[in-house]
Image 1 (cartoon, rainbow, N blue to C red):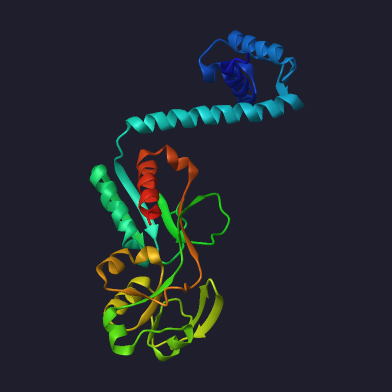
Image 2: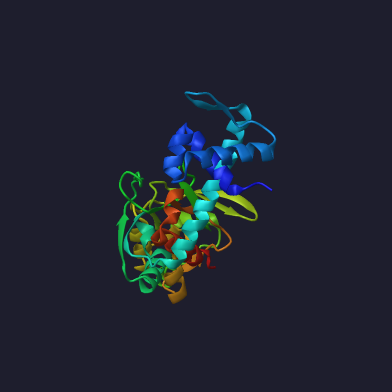
Length: 292
């Protein structure tokens, strides 16, 4: 049976480029290092290192084996971090970047529960529609609507949302309720993405409607609260409407139709998962945004 400790010793020798340096790093005698590597080679039945009086180098088999040894070490270290994280209480600072409109609703629910559970964490939220470099600017998380460009960051889907049309009961009582997509032409419509063309999708197919861009804003929050104030009909992501729909402040318009589909991602760096602040926040956010 393979001795996993010998695999780690071999990886140290290969990384350091010498038995002596590996011995110093590992804190064991050089003779023990050499013996353990030789023992590993005997068990495997192949040579992993070319040895000379001046230096060592990896054989082709040794190079392939080193990659797997490093994977084993990384997995062991990750498991150790997880166990330590279970014992650690989150504390310090947690920084989050998100689109301006999405800061309300489920994100605030997430932050409220997180702060209740872990009061020693100071939370900073920057609401901006600018896509920041979260690593350079020191953020732990960013919430972003996809699709996302390729990067070295992890992008975990939090929610798939189908923007729906909504309006206040008062507006619909005064101006009538649209029965077909083309009826929107005769209504005040609130737009927030600079486009006055709404592509409405349903089980029957898709239809494009050019609406009157009576009120155009650049923020979801403004558009939503103008709709609550009876100004007009607006297309909004459903995960942003929990409270207003529950209270009856907004109601669906043309409920069989939705305006496209968007995915909300939470973006972070894999290495940060060793941080208890980050891992606990991700757990709570995943649960909050997954609810129906």
